[in-house]
Image 1 (spheres, helix red, strand yellow):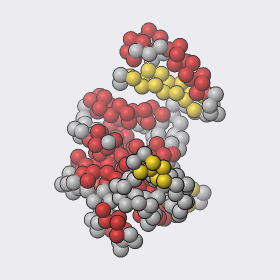
Image 2: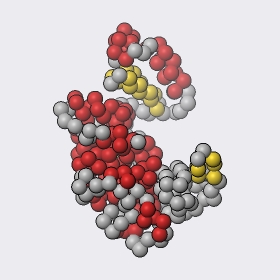
Image 3: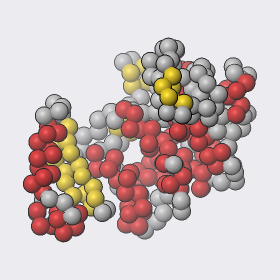
Length: 261
């Protein structure tokens, strides 16, 4: 929407104020854009620098949210395979055969929901602290993900606390959730997302950044590096509206709430 009256009528926003927000945004980065979604409408869209509507930048850790949504869809579609949903303990031969033998017996108690919420006990990124009941717990850096063996390096990341006992920002945890998704659905993460979200929602060309120098990762990283158009990224927060527009449920009843809980 580019007409001020239309923006106000449909989205209840003031276009001059959005222009001022864009002016601030372009002073914060060399390349980028500003998309504003409200009441189910893309009320504002403008880019600067090398960014444009059809660009596919590496969106880094925002991919964690997409992994969560994919897991929410999986819980609805494959309920019989993972009947306990977010409470399902996943360090089993069924869901994570790669993890055996377990390097820490506490991992047997880790649930899918804890992986997605980063409360499974996995050590945080670098020197990221732990949080327990609002109190900060300093943590020393430990070995984390290795792109040359993303699955096993994530699975074997050490625990800093018992599952469910604290939070620490962790990339291994959501990637492990994506490994569970691969075993349950029988599909690669990007293929499952494309079939259940990308195609029905009209994302256009997209993918994961799998290439690191001369090495190509065999699996997408559930913790990040998704490469979407900006409009595709914005559409993720409009799943209920987009599902109605394409005439099908891109996600089952309550699935989005479960995924983002």
